[in-house]
Image (cartoon, rainbow over all chains, first blue to last red; front, top):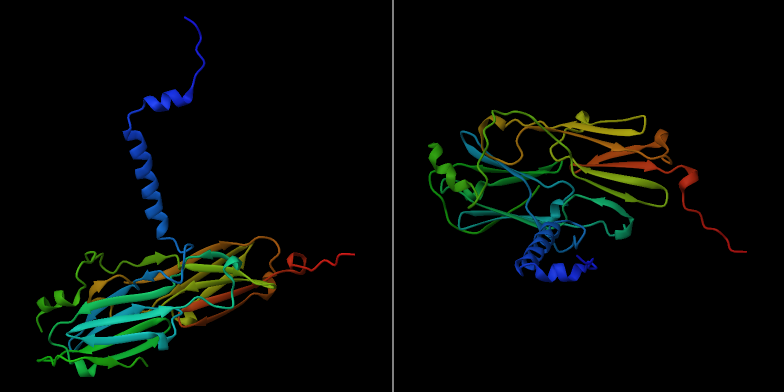
Length: 154
Length: 129
C-alpha cells in the first residue's frame, strides 16, 4: 500500500457538518459566559445587590448590600405595593481603566423590586444606610393605602 | 400576623431559601486592585462588617483580611441572600511593596488598603541624552 500524504483538510471535510455547529455552540457558550465579566464595559452593566428580608412582630426589615454606593445615588420608591431599590455605583473617575489589575466589584446601575404584603404602613417606611448596607424598615399595618411615595434615605 | 402573607414579599422568581440553620459561611470579599504611581490599592467590599472586627495583617508576603458581620435579625429571616457570614481572603504580595507603610481605611462597607511601592519599583522618568 502506497503511503499517502495526510491532508488534514480532507479529514475535516469528511466530518459531518454537525461538528461545525458544535464549534459554533461552544463559541456561543463562551461568549455568553464571558459576557458576565466586568472587563467588558463596566459602565453599562447592571447588577442586583444581595438582599435579606426579615420579619419581626411589628415590621419587615429589608437589608440590601450596597458597599461603596453613595447614598444620594440610591432611590427607594413604593408604587402599587412594589418596593423598588435602584441606583448606580460609579467607577472612580480618577483611575484609568488600564491601571486596574483586577475588577470583581460590581459597577453600573442596580435594581431590585419586591411586592409588599398589603399589610405594610406605606407612609411609615424608613430607610438608613450604614457600613455599606441599606436597611429598610416596613412597619406592619392592617390596611394599605395604595399611593406612590418617595422614601428618604438617611 | 400570619406568616403566609410573606410569600408576596419575595421577588417573582427567586432561588429557594436554604435554611441551613444559620450556619456561618466564610465569604471571600470581592476585590478591585489598581495601581497608582506610588502604590497598589486594594478595595474590598465588606458590607455589614463591623469596623472593629476587621483584621488585617501581613505575614511573609501574604496579606490576610478578615472581618465579622453582625446581624441581629438573623433568626427572623424569611428570605436570604446575605445570611450569616464572615469575610476572609488572602493576597500574595510580590516584592516591591513597602509592607511597613501599609495603610487602610473603612468607609461605606468598603475597605481600602494602600500598599506603597518601594523606591525600586516606582516608575521613573529616564532622560534621553
